[in-house]
Length: 398
Image (cartoon, rainbow, N blue to C red; front, top):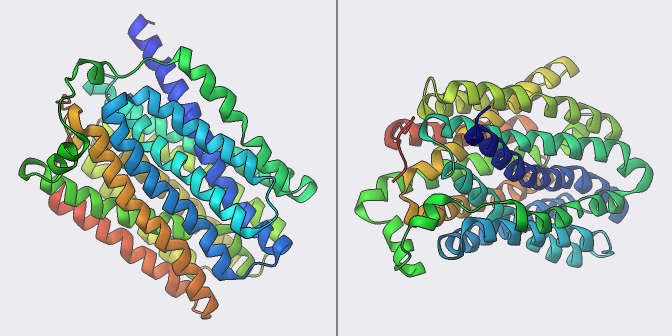
């Protein structure tokens, strides 16, 4: 194996572990919400706010750290965001009130929201065009690993030792972030760009005529994908409980569904350099929409598990393609800003999704109706890519 392949694999591993820790935190939140409802006697509206405050933090973090990434570098922002959510997770284990928990979830969300687009930008700028899509999708596949770890922790730790212990385990990334200071190079493309524009100049440029169509497409796509993802996946354990299964059983079933994320990523990584970004995004988003419809209508365990597994497979494959596609829409000088702004706008969907589910559940709206809305949301994202998206397969970054 040549030196370039070794360094590419090292970069993927270093950035991917950061991605895994992010996913572990987000994944555990869905299980912690269900446990907190029992411990603190939370209403469904309060549960919805836990997920939404997390997404408010992610929206702020994606915007703030995306802008910073074009000023101080991808590596520095990557380390800052990892530290922020790691320390926040440890402190949230010590909380005894919902108000304190929500404040810390906001800070954790800022770290999570900032890290994801910056890490994908760093990797996209550091690998050759022929490998870029595949490597970024493989980076996203670490998300499935993090969800799997979170499901295992939630299944074995939360029932026996409590949700506080699960959160303390999420502080491990703080140590890892310190190690990154010595082990991770910054993007060679970022290092070669002259940074004369102000932050405001970069924001204006993202919406200038050459990039306006791409920006509109990304903002619609991100909003639809994030709205449906957080609305559905943060509520998965609770929805399974609403369908008549026990809390422990719901953890088991979500763990099985989580395993389907890995083949979803790997199949998308294989296809993305062969069939292209638009094909993978459109195909996997349609698969997500159809699976969501059948999950909402499932009235037996077999239907629930089959549709849930397909939902995980297609949705996370689409996420991989989204992270590969987003940095390719902009030149290096505004790539962090453009990706961060799109992700930030998308996180507004993550704010509305959990609140939307909590409100409708409180109004005794049928689960079938709720998931039909998510199905429609994903189809709007499909139309945006189909009509406004351009193919960027194996194109050199500007």
